Amino acid sequence: MGVGYRLDHGLALTLTVFDGAVTGDEWRATVRAIFADPEWPPGRLNLTDLRTADLSAVTRADRAEIYKMNALNANKLVGMKSATVGGANFETARAFERDDRSSGLRIIPFDDLGPACTWLGVDERVVGAIIGELRRQLRDPDSSAGGAET
Image 1 (tube, rainbow, N blue to C red):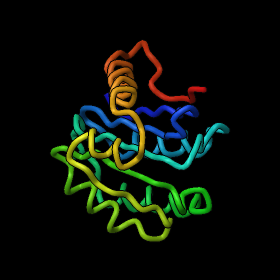
Image 2 (cartoon, one colour):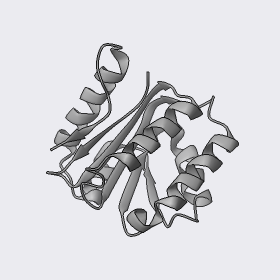
Image 3 (cartoon, rainbow, N blue to C red):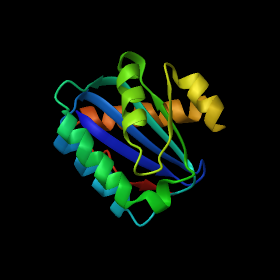
Image 4 (cartoon, rainbow, N blue to C red):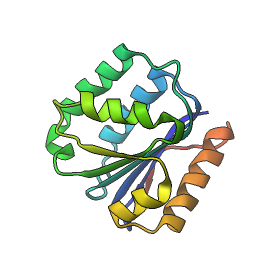
């Protein structure tokens, strides 16, 4: 398991899913891949799903590195509408938003997918299906979880 993402141009959405035990290395690798993807950003919307993640291995130092990576991409992050569905990781999502000030990224944490999708203006059923697909790919070592979708 780990972290996967999908760029959806139809929804103008970058969707990132954390599933199972996640390390700081996996998180950094995914953020690097997103920022390096020539299709990113597909639009001004971001959604991160942490509901099935175990973030206990992610350290303050890991988060500080992500903040630095975000700051280097601030020109693309400023003005994005970003939501995180935290579930049991709700407080972690709140702390990340509070502490990542140098990038201009502002994240609204939510407990559930429905309100997050409503706030972003995207169809919950469509987003839920993409999240399900990303989770299946993360759980199947023969699948690729990252990448762009046109």
